[in-house]
Every structure is written in C-alpha cells, then in structure tokens.
Length: 75
Length: 355
Image 1 (cartoon, helix red, strand yellow):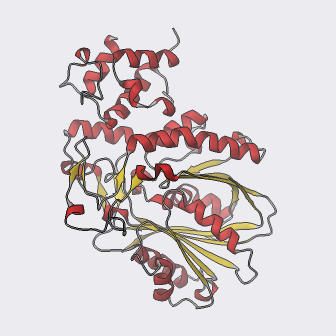
Image 2 (cartoon, rainbow over the protein chains, first blue to last red):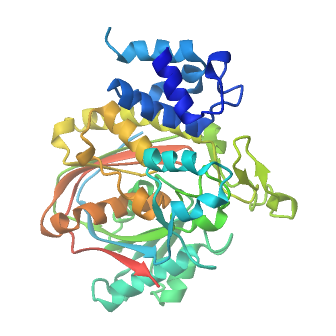
Image 3 (cartoon, each protein chain N blue to C red):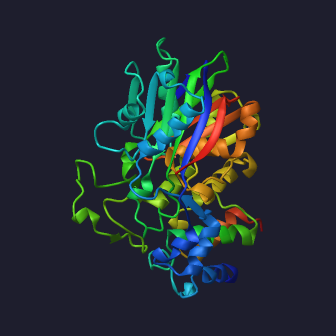
C-alpha cells in the first residue's frame, strides 16, 4: 500500500490519496494521470498491465489498484 | 467481415509532410497543466515533434504536391491514373469531392474514376479495399490511393488530449494488378453506435459552424476545445483499441492459417506510443516488429501513419525485396480493420517535405 501511495504522490503530490476512495471522481487523477500511473506501476513492479485492464474502475482507490496488481504480481 | 483478394500489389509509396515542425516542449505553455506533469506525459505517450501545416493549407495541396513530385520524377505518368481514391476527414469543401479538386488541378484525364471516402485511421486499409475492387475492371490498370488530412486546422491548440499528437500529412500509394497469387487476407468491423468517441461536432449540416460552436469549453480535465474542433474521448478510444484489435489480428491470422512468427512486421496505425506498446505487450509481439516511432516524429496523421511507418522504417528493404506484413487501422466510425499481405518490392518508397 505504501509503495502505491508513494507512486501516486509522485504523480500528483498536491493530493492526500490515503484520504480518498474515489481518485477519479474526486478529481485527483485524470485520464492522463492514469496513463502515467500505469507506466509507473509497470516499471516499479516489472509488469505490463494489459490494455484491457486500463479502465477507471481499476484505479479508483488503493484497494482497487492492489486488487489489479494481484493479477500481475506473483506472491 | 472477412475479405480476400489476390493478384494485387502496392507498387509505390510516397508520403508528404509539411516542413513546419513543432515540438511539444515549445507548445506546453498552451496547456493548462504544470510543466512537470506535461513532461512526464511526454515520456510516456511519446509526445515529441509533430508536423503541421503553416497557414491555410488543404488536403489537396499536400496531395497535389506529392503527385506532381511523382510526375516530375517520372515515377508516375499523368495519363496512367485510371482511378483516384482520396481518403480524408478534412476535405477542401463539403462539395465537390476532394478527388475532383485534385483531378482538375493536376489536369488528369476525364476517362477515369474519382472517389472520396470519409474515413480516418483505418482509411489506408479501407482505401486499399476499394482500390483492389476497382482493379476488377479491365479498363482500370492503375489506382492512385491518396490518404490526406490536415486535422491540425480542426484541433484546438489548448487541447492537450489531441493537439500534441495531431500531424498533417498525405500519402500516395499506387495500386496495381500483380502476377502474385498469394492471397491477401483482410477483415473489417464497424460500430456506428460509438461514433461520438471521435468526432468534429460542428461544420456539417447537423450543426453548422457559428459563433456559438467556436466557443472554447473545458472538457472537465482542463482541455479547452470548441464544437468546431476535433473531440476525442481518449479513455473510450484507448479501451476500444485494446479490446477490439488483438482478437481481430488473431482472427486474421487464423483465417490465413498463419502464425505471429510468420509476420515480419506489424505495421499499425500510430495514435500514440503508449497505446501501441500496450497492444504489442498484449499480443506478445516484440516492439521492434511493431514500430511506434512515427507519432513522436511526425504526429498522428490518421490514415497516413501506416504508409509513413512503412516508408520511414522499411524503405531500403522494400525497394530491394518484400516482407510479410500485417497492417491494422482503427479509429473514427468506430472502424477497425487489418490485412495480411506481401508488401514489396516497391518501385519507389519516399518521404518528402511540403514547402
């Protein structure tokens, strides 16, 4: 969770992502920020998030991002 | 819809780009975003340079410049043009067709077929289908397929969603009969229910241009564009491409009884580098077999990006020999299409600057 928060804050340092359950709805991430986030997550975890998974629902909050990453990151 | 052709070839390719080159860094100040965020986006999306027309240059200007170059260099005879297909979303006029404008300006013969097609990023393939079909006629020996767009003139400079990527360009492809019996496999799908994902709302008869349609509006993400401008629902288009294109390619290869390894190059339309690399990852195609270097050098010029990818990356190889190419275009309509064909050897393969 801390690693994801750190990545998010690197993209939009002006927001407190820990306090939101809807990053897109609360205006903290726009569609280009989501693209940047995917690129940063790909690099940080050594994965390639599939294009079909790049939909706003998968980046709505920390829990959604963690759930998405579980598909790609082996425990 | 599956399509199959044979005894057809592209015998020459020319691309024309405006000499006027702009850089994303220079244009960043137009966008209402902190420079650091824009620079990060530049890196991810491949925003760098794009070629756009300087002043009131039209699609027919780029096309005529290219065709005059072919006439002057002896690569095409003026009287050899039996059909002229022009694929554009930015016609000179609502009427007459831009193909008629080009025919008249170039002094081409009357005994020929002129046709406009309103298509965009899949337009190179749609144009090839029409060219292949016209060659069924014994009187048609050579079809000139022109793809041309000057969409920078319809894109708001304050729209970070579209402006950094847009490129103006034209291509001229010569399409002829061939002795080669190798089938050309293709497929095509269209979905008009999603037509608003990419559109210019005003300027037709449904919503004529007016003072109201020229007013800039915020799209909710600090991008300002009017109804006169190109509008792209970036999220919807990205999702459309990622969902529809990989299965389309798998279907094409299955029909052709070919494998991914049988394809030398995947020459796809280039909306942005991120989108193409995600497609390549999903299809498990190495990046070097799916070039994504046109959009960052010249911009996204709709139906011209495929011929430009061919010319920029494979010129020497195609002048000397041939490759097994998988082409794919996807965009306005929505429309998506792919083709598996032997490409080359070409009689000419050239990129020139429009001055």
